[in-house]
Image (cartoon, rainbow, N blue to C red; front, top):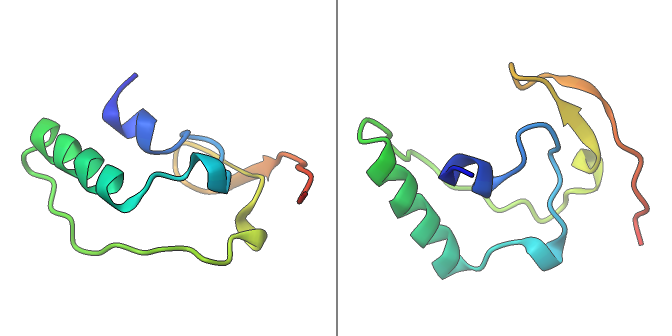
Length: 74
C-alpha cells in the first residue's frame, strides 16, 4: 500500500471520524508523500467539518462520481 492509498481510499470519498488522522499524523503523512514525490508542492489544506453531503460517493479514476455506496449515518 502506498502513501497515497493510505491517505484515502481511491474510490470512496468517506472516512469515518474514528479513522480520521490527527494533526501530527497528517503532517507525518504529508512529509512522507513529499519525500516520495519530490515535485509535489502542497499549496493548501482543508478540514471538512460537514461531510454529510459527501458520504458514500464512489469516485472514478478521473475523480468524478460514478455511483453511491449506501451508508447508515449513525
